[in-house]
Image (tube, rainbow, N blue to C red; front, side, top):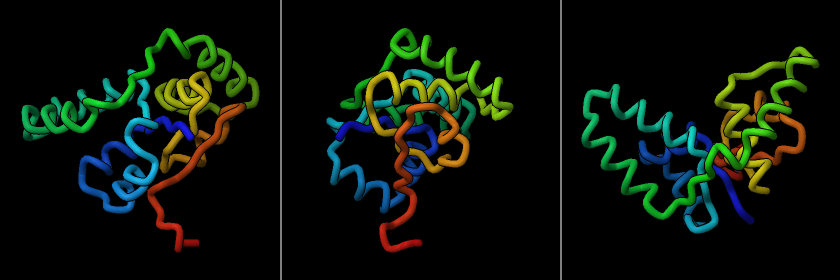
Length: 136
């Protein structure tokens, strides 16, 4: 299986979430990717933090072996998804549309704790690794 990691998942990983680390070890970092807008969100968060240099270094080290899906690969799908969401009156944040569309375009399962909103995208597959398998 191939996965695309959402920003919220990466933030929790960077903060040391053990459940997410175990999942990542099980699937292998080589089977994971991120959307380029996710990288932007992480860099922005690091730059506005109290320790920007330290946080940027941690992000770069953590993601050094992760494939980055460029916007050009999913922008058409994202535009169609946004139109469909507007038609159905179920809009979500633009970055969520972009990240979800990157997963769809690259035929990956999106790993996110934002299942409620992202499940509105047509054709998306989502897993929430934030909960242990023993939780309901």
